[in-house]
Length: 371
Image (tube, rainbow, N blue to C red; front, side, top):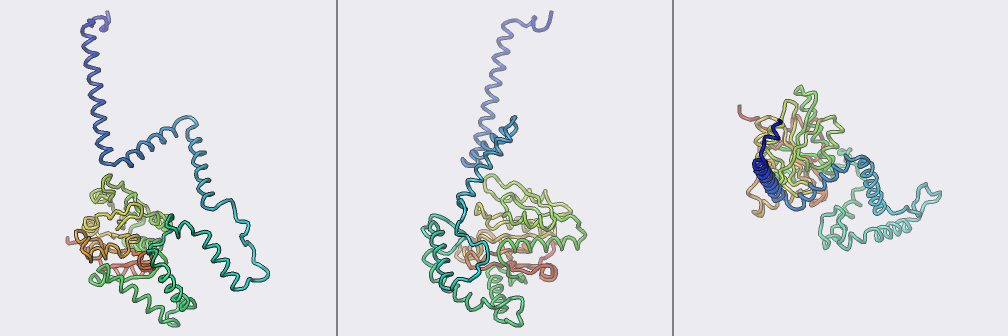
């Protein structure tokens, strides 16, 4: 006789009741955990997480991956069509045998700009322009006249065009004063934009690491870091370690950074604020960690160029520090072309980093951690 035959119907019934109760309790427990997680993440993030799981599961089904690729290509094609249209029959693709008169050239430029910028001028589209609408005409006039006065100069020849060197030096000095760079002994360089500033900073950290005997330099950042960092690490052959952001604050978690730092780490990249979320990472905590590990800390202030500094002056951000006030911050990229209309990188280790860089990026003298 098998064991199953020895179990009485009454025992079997009680077992089923207990088993069902256990199943119900487990379901309630999992539901409560899921609800807590959704509350912490927020509705939008929760829906996104569910969709990610659904899409990931669908891609594993037979033929699911191919169907997703087709759907994705269709969406990309539609986005491209919305941006670029069906072509441009008026496009000039060869050098005309006879040039147009200056008046005709300017008329074409004005016509195309008027037709193409309707959404931007109406305020319905954003195009990376940061000054207020009422300032556009006066600012555009000033920029036009300044450019007209200087468009036949070349910053590569400061001996020939000393005024350009003076302008650059004064811009750097003013921005250094805004980010507490003068007190820290920082210097700066002028770049074409935030991406170049980040490239130059990462190149400096790579070379500094190589000088220290690191053959495979690594950089640590949050998954919310600007894509320019991916570009920099790809160009310069550096490994980029991306850490998941805090699900509630969206900040780069300091303790996760501490755990990720290894013998090949040359720098940590933090945002103040991040481009996509407008979140300022806990720079003070990261500064202390980097200072203790004697590695670089780059602060991406590209989007918030001037904003955080002026907020602090107005008493709106005195509860946190993010710039060269902190001894562990070694470089800052500042996009003053957004709210100041040019771009900088500042450096805190002039002796070494500046010799292997050259951009406005603020570099500062870095103090070694106490042993």
